[in-house]
Image 1 (cartoon, rainbow, N blue to C red):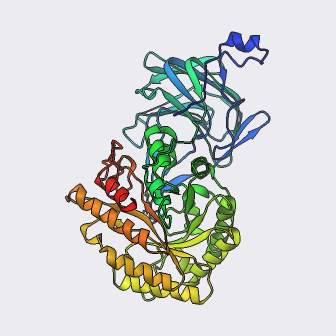
Image 2: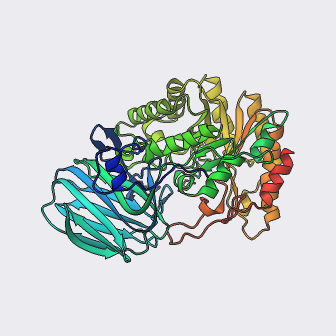
Image 3: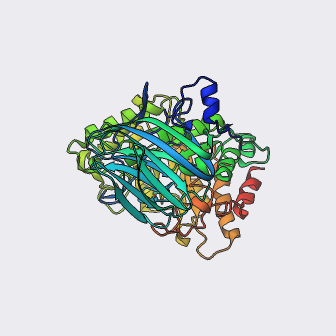
Length: 542
Ligand code: XIL
């Protein structure tokens, strides 16, 4: 990993070089990237923090479960070796809460759970300084303490780490301290911020002093290898893409994860970062920074982006479920989101998981169907084509690799869409093999791929993972290799994608526990060692 490390600059040097001194520390605002930070806008006099009101919601009802405030992923962070202090001027405090958060480790973010890892949050709440410390062992803060009174307007907060404690001051006055709870044992400090609806504030100054180095975002370009999955797949007579779902926080703070992501794959899919609850947390308020980080990584590593997903019934912000004008909401969302990424992503999952083989019309009677009937699907594709005329547009579904009612209904649906001239280009077969019964013969899948070819549709393996369920690594390897071989051989199959690559962050983990217990469904184990599945896939591409 190549890091642009700026050596700690002493106050003396700052003064000597004629740069106006920032309160005895390294300036973390000027010369650093605060432009890729969700909810934040760089201004002439700092960084304006606007309320995103972003939440992790429950999958079915869309209840608010946990706040999901943004972190400046692309911006500066600190490498800390010992005691240090951060000084922040929080300006324009108007009675609404304002938060600055220092993360020792970044949270891992699922649709229905945010795994809080160690962090300290200081907030100005009702004129008082509220300090909360997460120790990485629970969703809720391990310790919360409130100090002082009458804080408003411009408040300079100092957060000092020394002797296992964090000491807080406001406007130069010491207010108290809390246990550090080993928050900074990682040796790293990342910055995040949040504002309460109705409020908003300005980070007018931010500096660090003590035993700290400032680290700007890592060079995203990763070393390549001629022996990688992507190298082999692009060397085929008919090249296909090999893809994976990617999560933005590990991509930023886990160098080993980042290296494999760049080396092995030439197509990436944002696992969660483009879903509605993340990109449009409030109506008309968009938060694209995390997804943009993934798109930038892809560009740096010559990878295509398969974007996911515009219209689904899960991962929706609470407001979207209760909005009375669903059609407008859906069309506005597609226009804004597909429009934002137009030219930078190759493909979209426009409609995700629309099928229900047990319903009267074979479709899931989700909120979009309830509002618009089955026509929502055609409307969504038409809007996506308009917003990004060059993107290849997919319908993505699970459980359709196997024969049966679900596949029959899907086939009929896409046949009808094609006949009606709806701009659908392809079908994604998720290929989740969560249970033994999900392991379908490659030959059945092949027949489905060919049936869609006859309709003029492309196909992709979009989200493959294979839980072992007590079987050996060899069984898992055979499953991955079997589906990959079909994709390699069928001319309309454009990419083979897995749903993440390492059990360290897999979506089959048992979540909502600290620590979450990892699944075993992916080709790299939790220590990032390749399993038999990896070798088996390489063999198919040789
Ligand atoms: C999953 C993610 O992997 C999880 O992190 C999240 O908590 C839930 O969603 N089908 C899809 C994907 O289309 O978006 C889902 O991703 C897995 C099933």
